[in-house]
Image 1 (cartoon, helix red, strand yellow):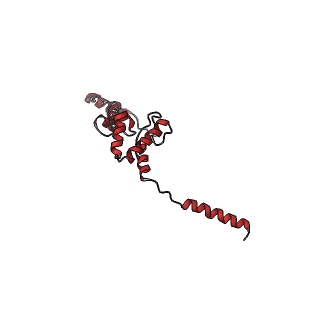
Image 2 (cartoon, rainbow, N blue to C red):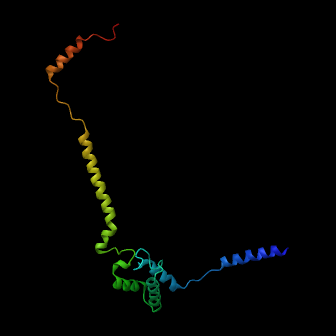
Image 3 (tube, rainbow, N blue to C red):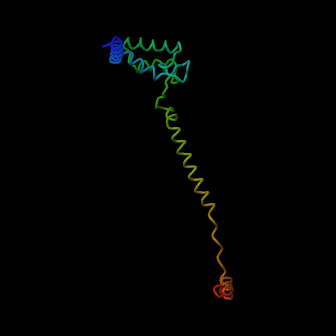
Length: 157
C-alpha cells in the first residue's frame, strides 16, 4: 500500500471513532436543560432561559444547577422563579384559574365566529328567495285561456 492510502484510511478510521464515541451527559445537566426550556428569559422575553445568551439567563441556569445539586425538586425550582418573577416567567401558562381563557379563548372565538357566520348565511339565503306570486284571479285566468285559443297554431304552414 502506498503512503497516501494509509493516511486516507487512518483519517477515515479516526473520523469514524469520533462519531462512535458517546457522550454521557450528567443527569443534572439534563434537568437543568429541561427546567431552563420552560422558563422565559426576562431580558429576551420570547426566548427560553436555555436558548438565551444573556447574562441573566446564564445566572438563572447556574442558579437552577445549584438548586438541583442542593437537592431541590424541579417543581420547587419552578415555584421559586414564579414567586420571584410571577407567572410571566413561564413560557407555557398554567392551565388553571383565568389562564384557561388563554387556552380556551381561540377555540371559543372560532366556534362563536362560525355560529355567527352560519346564522348570517341562513338569513341571507331566506332573504334572496323569490317571493311567492300573488294568487291568480279565476276570471283573469279564464280570459287568458280564451285569448290563447284564438291564436293561430304555429305548426300550420
